[in-house]
Length: 82
Ligand SMILES: [Zn+2]
Image (cartoon, rainbow, N blue to C red; front, side, top):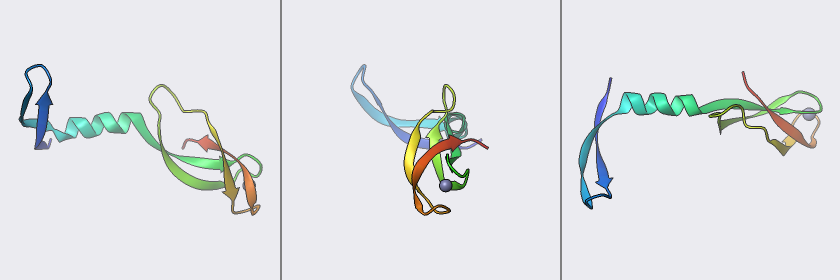
């Protein structure tokens, strides 16, 4: 458990101040939402890229036109989770 002092702002009474926040809990919340995934070539299945995506509410479904190192041409890449 790590505690950190960070600035905070409350809009209700327009007060700037310093607050103590638990860094451990903040990091845990982040790790639940974001995940490293592979961008896999749809044609040959080669995993060419590594990226971080928001996985809150399931794996995002998008396809990217990226350069495939194996085929040496631009192909459609889809997300592949571990
Ligand atoms: Zn390919």
